Length: 250
Image 1: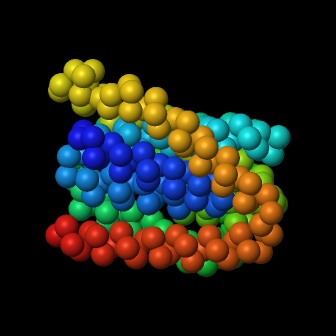
Image 2: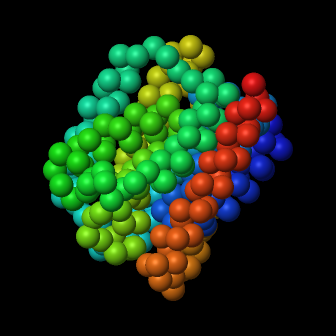
């Protein structure tokens, strides 16, 4: 990783943590797009760096909103996530940069599915387990899965703080698993020295925490109506940009 790449990533971490602090998603998609765009960063490195930064950002956001976490849904989701990653370890395919861009572009479009007909609810036991399986799979291969996870929260009887808090916990777990999944082949091939340097991750942690805290301040004054409306159009715009990037890489 070059010094310029490190500076770009750290700057993007601050901005995207702020965005995710408000909407509970979107920031992760942008950060993944930035990482993949850097020539000096491989897909595996991008996944590990993204996972580490997003793990901290989501974990800090969950801590700040810990009183609003639905722990029953979280336990059920965790079971599904373990099943999902277990299946991925049996698959040898890993996406290249173009395929990651394609997945990043298609994932946000899931937000336009007719949710009123899908009857998904993270508070129901089977739905929470299914969410863990599917979201963990997409998160591990594309780096993000916020729009897919959102499908399971739309019909849940939760306010905006409960949604962001519970989603943050699920995403923190997903990123921890993602780091492990992508680190295994990197370490096996080139040793521990091939992982992102400790100094870089140490610098990214306070940046992500600060951006998350500032985003949370905005969330506190935003109405539920504006929250849902802005989130939908924001992630759609981001998805279209990623699809254009996939076409450009091709």
